[in-house]
Length: 514
Image 1 (spheres, rainbow, N blue to C red):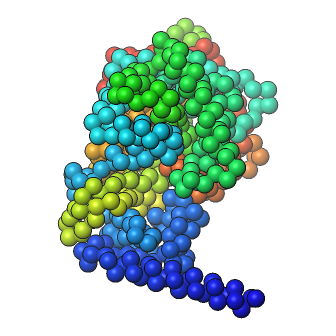
Image 2: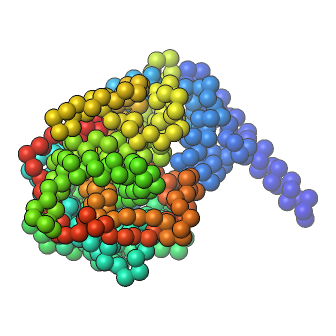
Image 3: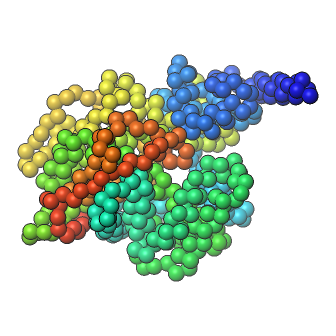
């Protein structure tokens, strides 16, 4: 019996290998070279690699094949072309036959489970209009000022609640999830947003956990699908009585969908996928707080910068944080945030090859995927200098910075940072439209914490230098393997009432990505 079983396994192995070999015979010689998986199992090797390592699998493949600027992983007839070479990436971004658009549809079909009718309608010009209106609605302007003020007010409330906790201790990642959901929810959906209800927020996190397996249609007990339906039901109730303080982006997206003929029920499902706005912001906030607070000198320098530039004190006990100044003149805070992104992001930009396309000398075949990986780019010494693996909070500070009428010059020579070498928001022309919005949110929360709170590990052992992380799944930053339990103490120089305002300076945040 054992002998027959082994013969069967050997037969399956040989058959799978023969299938892979057969498919590889149809590769065009101009296509990027196929690479073998680290797990030497035909057909399943790369699938297991992604399952085990998540987004870190791209980094593993890059290191194993560092002599190749682009390569192919094949699973039978399906191919993914992978590159981190900026030379090729720049050419690919200019191509009109390589596009993100099909993945917008795929996300709605897989994660929103919209109907076949809605999937057929949500195509072509409607997708183009939907994406353009979303981008415009996230652009700076009076409507974004309203959103940022709501976000700031909610952030003040959540920091006050944190300081008022009875235990004097909290879990940083757990709180990051809570504050981002509440601040983003208030900003996008209005003050009384659906995620104020704890059970809806919890359902969203369950849905998030199942999203990777939903890509493959796997949810044996239906727990993830049930959680998604709970979120969709909350959206159904919300949009049937949408409040006046809903953001422009929410109103515009709904208007475009309805006018485009998408069935009403499917509009709720498509809008529910906007909840993925939380998933990247949460770990970014967590690690930004962690990196800054674990460096006392940096923390104090950031506090001084915010006090001098963005904070007004009215009377003895009222503080006003100017969001516009925080966005544009607190260069060290912004730099520390962007360095956190550079060191910890595992962003992968997904594209579909719409037609057979030649990039330089490489042929990319129609219907296959192209993945542009950020991590090897962010850790390339040729782009970032010899200390690329060192967290440098001043890396993104401009070479000259004005302070109170004086000019401070950075004397350390650094490589010029090009938008194409900083990829946490994707790569042009497909940059995340909400990058200004998400950055503003994190800057506000970090500023409020820094000015009002002292944080330290509750166990008294100090900040761990390189805390272990989970594998990257849907979010583009890894979650901590163990949540940081922190002791919080109110700062005497932050005692009083807090408000936010938006002053005269309305320039965009100077992000390295553009």
